[in-house]
Image (cartoon, rainbow, N blue to C red; front, side, top):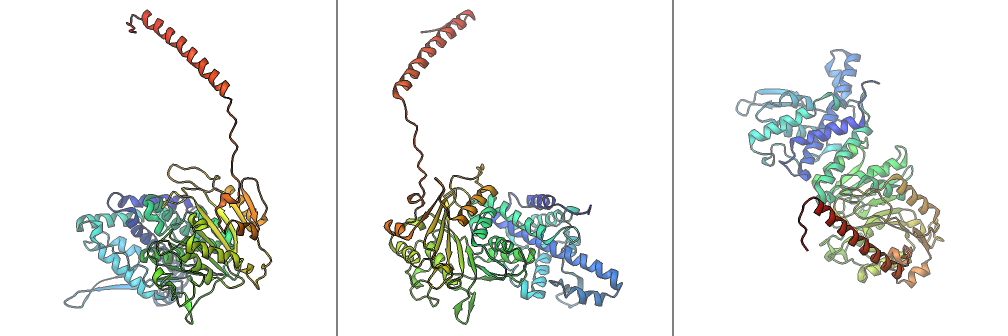
Length: 521
């Protein structure tokens, strides 16, 4: 249709709306205002589109139209404002973007936005309860009242143009969801290290999801889900709607992003819990951790003070192989993921810093036990500078519980090592994996065959001989022979260059004399 809006148009318009806050509020903060406004505009456009369709069917029968609308994915209630003294209704309007746009010049516009969001939450508790609790459009962080009102008016006007008409006739849920991810990525790039709290680069999420290989009917979990991008990539990998998504996130604002993100992608049924996955997990059934077919995550790297002091008495027995160091929580997150994967069946894919592969002490003992239990399937080294939060190279570990005793693959004893650290697209501030790089990793992983200076398949005995050290260079030989230098030839070249330099200087002196320039020395 000619009135369809392209992905790029929506992306560009939404990003331009960010100009309202640039230079006033840190990107890590103003992302919440932009993303919540985008979310509000989307549900308002969907509601408006459906309302117009029902008006064609039922004419002026507003009650019947409203009943039909309330059977949709969400409800937009009617707001009634009352005089504090008399109790009389002073204003009455639908809790949507358009009502706020009409009131954008009101001196209490920030308060009105908060009221609308509160009412939407209250009317949609099952899906949206608590999603907006961490954001305040009437906050002094947006400036003094006059400046704040001007910025909020500009924000509402930024989302008013025809290029941000997000009705279902013009854009699909996928387009809106992609815009949401696009903005999160852009905010991630702007926010630098702060982005690590909520953002995993899209290409890394895609690779991790493909390595985890979820299938139809799977329950998929990310216990450190950030803004939900990795969960969404895993769901896309299934290729149909027959899946269930679960997540846990410790940061309240980021948890809200994940709830909105899954909603915008049409994954309303996703259960995302706000909790500390290591110390107070909420994905629990009958006092036991819920189990999943696939567990994926990009947990915080080397987290200090993660809760080691209580780990020995963990009621869920996640640390029976040992307690990781209190100053480095990497293996705590890995053990948490493994215990959430179905025994003799579940798959785990996790992003880790390279220290996880070779550090000794408690970490070395945990690593040895997991290898002896035959759970580790692959170690994939990635390039450095892929993340906005760190420039260090990272690795992906793939665990397959079907390899443990009693599983369908218990006779698979080797581990495939892939060194993909040198294959990437270089960027000014950040490197990127291209599809061709990901396809090479995936095809190598599936084939489990050695490739010169790229992949190696190690037997258990070889890993044991290496004291269960998984440092990739121990297995993948990436040594490049240096070209032999001919010293005599180099000396001759230097002598020739010095002779040529003398000639050039003499010619330069002659030219300067011809021009009447006095030459000293």
